[in-house]
Structure formats: C-alpha cells, structure tokens
Length: 280
Image (cartoon, rainbow, N blue to C red; front, side, top):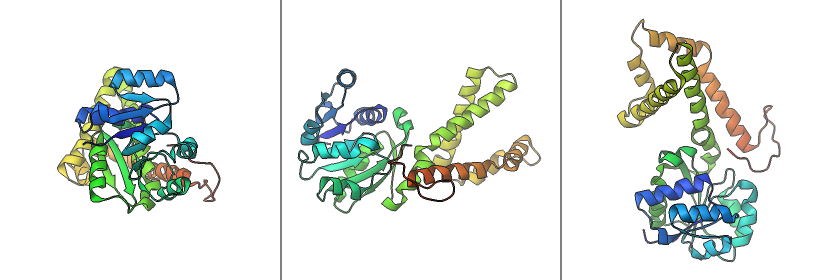
C-alpha cells in the first residue's frame, strides 16, 4: 500500500496496530509517522519500530493520507481542534475512541470528510484483535478496501452500521476481561485439585483458545460443539448443569447489559446520566 499512515497518539493499542501493519508488510516504515505528547515515548517508538515521529500533531496531520486518532475520548475534541487546518483534503480519518460518533467528528472539524469509526480490542497486541468498524458514505470502495487491509493486519474486522457501535464494547472490546476472569477461575479450580498454578493457567488458556478456534474454523453452532463434549450421563454435562443452575448465561448477559448501558449513559435504574465519554 503506497499511502502515508499517521497515528496521533501511540499507546499500547496504537503500537499494536502499527506492529501488525509492519509485520504483515502492508505498509513500510517510510510511510508511517506518529505523534505523541511525551519525548520519552517518542524516542522508544522511533527506536523500536524505526519510524518517524513528532511531538506536534499538526505534522502528522499534514503527512497522513489515512490518519488514526489513537487518543483518549476526553481529549478527542482538543486534538481535532489542533489539526483541523492541517488535514489533507481527501484524508481518511479513523477514530478509535468509545462513544465518539462520525457526526461529532465532522461537526468539530466543520467539514464533510471521510470518517471511519472503529472499536478494536486488546488482543490486537498479539495479532488476534477483533475490530468493529462503521463508515460514512464519503468513503469509496477503494478507501474501504485499504482500511480493511490495515485493520485485518492485526486480527479480524467486522463492518457494521454505526447505530450498532455502542453495543460493540460488551461483545468484543470488553469481553476479553470476562474471558480472563473465566480462565482465572478455571485455574483456581485446577489449583484446588492439586495442579500447579502456572500449569493450570496454561491449560485453561489453551483450552479457551482451542474452543474459540473450533467455533471459528468448523462453522458449527456453539451449542452443537458443547453437545459434542457432553457425553450422556458424563461429568461434563454435570458441570454444565451446575453452571446453568448458578445462572452462568444470565450473569454474562447482565454484564453485557451493564457495559452497554455505561457506554450509552444509562444508570442501573434505566435513567440517563452525564459521564462524559466513556472508556472501555
């Protein structure tokens, strides 16, 4: 891809995305430029990835054909105000901030432009990310293809309408935290039965990785895969029954509802509240 890619902000998520692009060879270092607010961070990034960096957001805005805004939601508008006069006319802007809409970006910049709203997750750090994205009507088919190539370089991408984006954190952005809790609980159970803790963590994590791959690669319904493990009268169905008796599925659904309500600004009673732009 012969396009200049810019990153304003480059924390763990931004670096994960850059590393994925470089590893997949979809972009060269000469076509990447990053801005950060701290000289120490900039030095680390330049040395680690061999790319150009700056302490000035405007320089990256002037450079980029595709611009990632990898900053916290709370400073999103501040950054947009800084760069609004430096952006290329045909730039594709990719936001990663929870709760920031395409309309809000265009309003802040006071112009119509190509905008992609995304929600990646932390497994992007190991090349197994899940990124949801929505676009506005100004992107061409070529633009969309280029963005998908970039996002697929560090995991998988799903395109959806923007009205669904507030539901994404509960199912993919925040859900790794639920999975870590489950893996920790499985390991604790193994330790209780005498398995050394580090070994228990490895066994539990690998089992979850394998289960996820079974869903993705076999195309079978998760319920059917569950049935395949449950021998009639066996120990697994006893475990499943115990989970159901303790409202395992209900707990997950309620957790997801709480996550989505937080994103949308709804409190436990169903009323709206003001909280600014929420983080995952």
